Length: 112
Image (cartoon, rainbow, N blue to C red; front, side, top):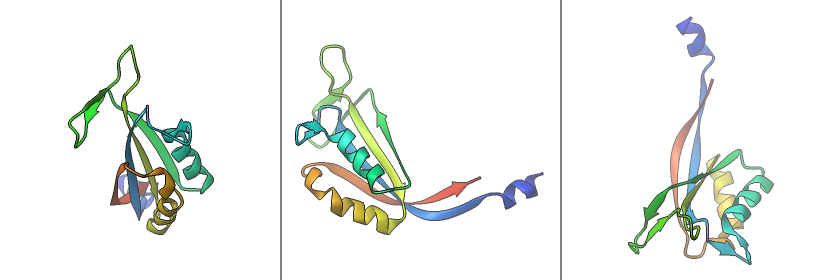
């Protein structure tokens, strides 16, 4: 059984783009998080997910958190695709990323 499972697993290299924001971040009077996900989907990228955190802080040391009075929760958008497609996407959203921290790393996508 293990040998059959091993044969059904495939993998390929990819690039993961992680964009660090808060729910409050906006661009052109719209949610930056929503705009980025819409553009990624429109560009036909393989997949993207938004993760919301309870709290976090960055280089400024300012604490961002989720609470009842206002919404300032940190979010991370994770998009995975081939390196050249991630590069093209970054070029296409350059107007939205001013002052935004993001990370790019090489990953191995495993499909069972």
